[in-house]
Image (cartoon, rainbow, N blue to C red):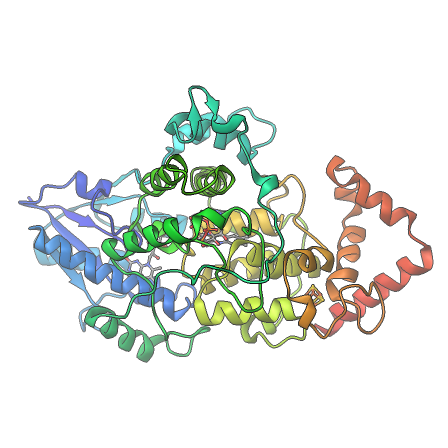
Length: 502
Ligand code: FAD
Ligand code: DLZ
Ligand code: SF4
């Protein structure tokens, strides 16, 4: 009897474990655009369009390859509205009683599939460098789960940038060379952009009519939506941007949204690109003398280090992870996260860009929107939902550890050894945002003072019980204690007034 092979919107990969386990001659592939996945949070329209287009093109490829694919479009009248609903409908239609899938990247969907009245077999997602067992074995018994040590194991496992059993160049990590401030101009013209073909146009019209009122702009839409395009985008990045990627990895600019970043996370996360394919291409660029070690090591670390590590954390920590709130932050997300209308130029730029591109790079996410939310004590679950909604690459397994853990410290330090907070000085050092801001980054108090400056001390003061004993924060707390009492009182009063007005 035939079985149903489930392929989800972020599983559009030929080598998917569910397809590997299937028999092309008798099994039936099920793919479905469903309201539940498109609305469990109100995704950015670009994200929905990207996923639907990639799904439609992948389904066409599977058909060409001889698979029987039952594909449901969002506006099909018989659409059951959810993945389990569609599987049940297809089971009735075909007489199949068993479903084979690849483990979804979200606890919510795993649970929903397990609750279905159909026999289910979920295969591990093999599109990662490490397995969950490997991660759990690494994590077992460790006092702190620091990414750096996991990353070294991944270097040893893959052999990437290894010289025998030693790291290439003698050091594991070249991050200290990757913190150059914003340059005057950028020689890279940005990621490769694709003109929407007929499939993409059709999806754009559908998304416009159904989700046109969600946060963010659908058009222009230029993302790659199939493997061939994604590979071209990768080659473009390796050729033109990778050599400078490291230098300006943390920089931010008013007039350049992408700097030397790859913009490959959406392609990687839905499976149009494979992590090892990307890392080997980057390593090759180093070996050929095309890109320096600091750039290539920094880039590879993001993929076999951070990306694999956050996935391990998500599945190790369990379904309650996105609800954690270790610092008991309860303030509502300010309205300007949806409009970009704030006089704080850094936030306005990062949010406006997010609305237009469904993309902001790591430091914009961590040290602008994330930093502000943490300093202001915004409820981390609201922050988590915001990130899950607004970015084209956002799937819970990767978004939640980055937001709840790394950015908001809401997991109490599972990921970060100290909170990622900074005053305006950091943003000023790494960007040109402050030059065109109504606030003065040099002012610590007063009507023109940068709000990050007062909020920074407010955060440290209100969480002194937790952080003052943290060795990595000793110096900062010593500075706070040494500060004149009158100045401290002014800072806290002004921060409170700002928060009250939010
Ligand atoms: P580059 O800077 O060019 O890096 C190359 C690749 O490395 C990325 O494509 C990505 O696959 C990987 N990578 C880099 N940093 C990380 C990281 N911290 N975790 C996992 N992978 C990483 N990334 C997502 O893919 N999805 C998310 O939903 C997401 N949410 C985030 C939320 C917050 C609060 C923060 C601080 C970071 C988040 N990140 C997320 C990580 C990172 O910001 C993005 O991966 C990166 O900006 C993607 O752009 P890029 O392809 O140009 O990356
Ligand atoms: C994100 C998303 C969206 C918007 N729509 C669909 C869809 O209609 N059908 C589908 O199979 N997958 C979709 N996805 C991706 C899923 O939400 C994703 O597989 C889970 O969140 C697990 O990562
Ligand atoms: Fe942001 Fe402060 Fe700089 Fe304005 S002055 S851009 S609010 S850091």
